[in-house]
Image (cartoon, rainbow, N blue to C red; front, side, top):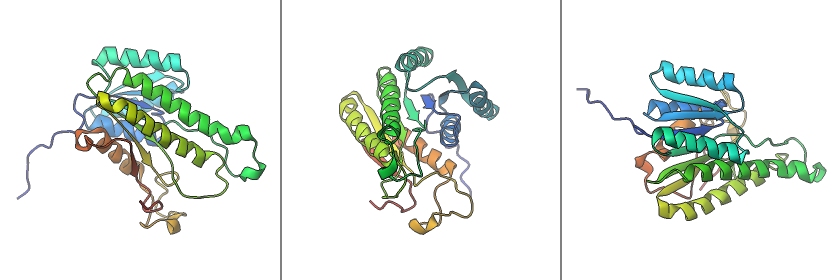
Length: 246
């Protein structure tokens, strides 16, 4: 006989900020957080695309608010975090899904140093900015999550792998310093862009048949943000389908 008991949502009454919420990963994570009971604050550069995601969340009975924001503008990010905290009594979750503005397709031998360093600077600056702004309002503990990239050795990706390595180092440092305050830090590892469709052109480098879907990435973010992962910090969440073997 099927169990008819209602399963409680994982993020009930949590306040979450999703930066880069209009993108494919950010919007999937925002929807998943809202589905699990969080009030979600969506940020990005374009109001119309953010409102479209927010409208979809509200249509499903969720709570969503929108703010146009540049994640490398520290003053604006700090101000927004303060406003969110004032509305919700603090901040519980911060997820950074913003891109790194990388330049790919050219060997390092032929690239300008500025182009190699561009994604490194963006990854570190954006994550440090949003994480520290949110952490100031996580008085009872909280969770900081970021979207990272693979550890494979793949040519012609410019500074992307350097950026992801720098992001991992930053997250470990944040975890070490924020842990005593009850704040956890983790990053999600994906093998290139998720959701490649039925036929994955890069399946030959995976152990599983395909890369994760956006929904699967979002579900992993929900788990990491929830009390089910209460002892998980300074942790890389491997969603690569076996492209990276730990």
